[in-house]
Amino acid sequence: MEKFNIAIDGPAAAGKSTVARLVARHLGFVYVDTGAMYRAVTWKALQAGIASDNKDELVRLAGSLQIELYPGEQAQQVILDGIDVTDLIRSVAVNQNVSAVAAVPEIRRLLVLKQQEMARAKGVVMDGRDIGTHVMPDAELKIFLTASVRERAERRYLEMKDKQEEVTLEQLEKDIAERDRMDEEREASPLVRADDAVLIDTSGMSVPQVAERILELAKTAA
Ligand code: C5P
Image (cartoon, rainbow, N blue to C red):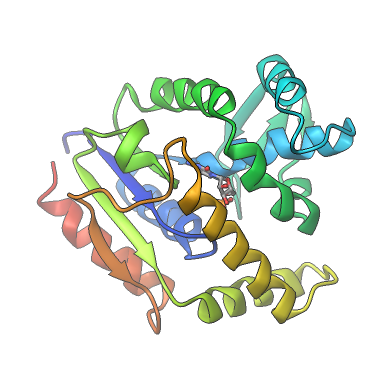
């Protein structure tokens, strides 16, 4: 099969990464979770005590980091300066600060360059917020996944409960809504559906059903 690229965008906790990983595995493509890159920068900034409004320091930090992505068992494995931060970047503190970090244009520029480099050889399923609009505007297939805030919070709650993290459903719903607001309202490549993206509302759909729908669309995309 000819290789091509698939862009999957959408609001927080819409199931993008789980679905993207499944689709990539099925096609034998490489899965790239771009949110993990913004999360890695945010985690490091929190470790270094850099405030999320200290743009100069954040940019300096982002430019100095070595972020490596590998296909993992459950989630994409993220190695930051040699440390496995795969689980650490999913914390509540990172959730609450990542959108401020991701709103800094210079940080986006740095990470987008890396993402475009990964997509160059084709055969990539990439998920994020600006993939179809900025990172891979020529992607052969663009998907915009969404679901109600409540449903997204419930799914994330179940995931986090499995990991024993102390968080309530209400807190998650609030964090997700706030992250969406910041991602949609920021000036630098905000979260918006590309004109040519296929909208899939995943409310009431299972992960395999969503993946199946994307694979169906992929048949005619190449
Ligand atoms: O996809 P995930 O929810 O892990 O992304 C975390 C955050 O990273 C998002 O809320 C958003 O602020 C930022 N992000 C982004 N552009 C992307 C991917 C993620 O701004 N392409």
